[in-house]
Length: 289
Image (spheres, rainbow, N blue to C red):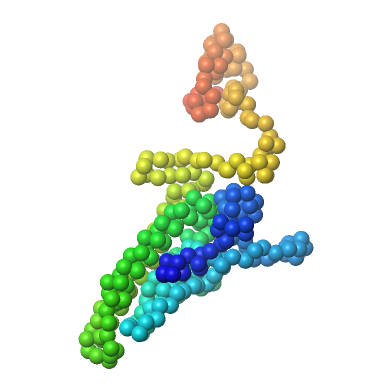
């Protein structure tokens, strides 16, 4: 078992089991498979029952993994807020913890807080969980892999016997500087991730300037549409003219016509939608009511 396995355990929501909270077909997960279930309110006691409790929870304040060794100081891999959206960051014993990891409470929002950076990712991802979490998990894996490589290069392959030795003191200061810079980089990347998610999935669309994809949508999954009675919805909208019904009197030359039917012909030849609106507005200053 390695570090990444332990990170994954913290994020477990019973995937690929009969109890999978985000499984396809689980109506409680919504159309996009969110494993999150909010705390009980006023209605749950009235209805009765309970939600399953997963290991990875939306309301977790923090989670961590500790590495101990006889060769070096212990390493704390700390993840503020929910493990589902956090990025685990390494710190060594005795180092000064950056302020971004010493702040963060529910009562005060702060963009300088690692806690809120993770919390915002979690809340944005709830809009379209599975598609967004594919991106989140890719960023998590890349940043955590880089942190593991940093620790391998800077600490875990180094042996020492006397923490009071001058050589260790110099080495420790260098490690602390690099870990502090790494933590700052992770916080910055987390805020960028939340901004990217909001842009890419805003208002039900999908936008990706890198691939020239803008404003696309794949709608809802078929199983969910069937489950919520989509087939029983209202009939489709009419396919005729969608807007800008001509004003009364248009047959008789209202708005500039000469009474020979040219006004009727002009409106009948207008394409529906935006083109019809443009034609209507174009003549508006000349009309009287």
